[in-house]
Image (cartoon, rainbow, N blue to C red; front, side, top):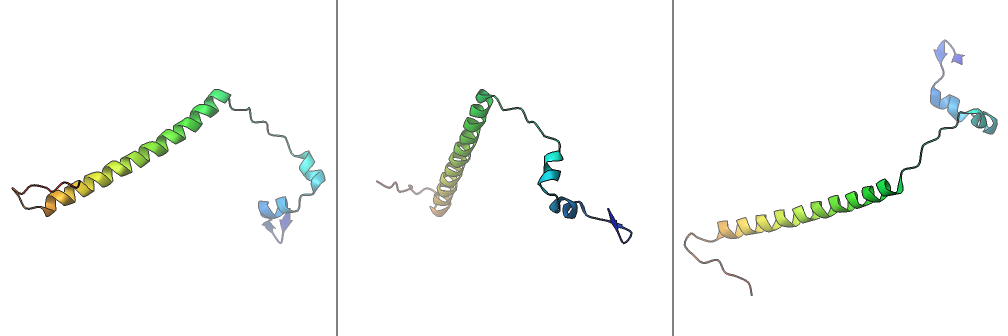
Length: 82
């Protein structure tokens, strides 16, 4: 479809589709994901989230520890909270 020497945008053409045109579109079939793979992917995301949280806690504790060591003069004992 050409209007005024220019080609009509695809989005404009798709917006004008009616149900009869939609029924003519080819059907896309995507095979289902195996249950084991889906379950493994779910656990992988959980493990990644836990590893990121653990890394954040370790980094925070290391930063706090470094600030405590930098704040105490050399040779002095570091006070331990009870």
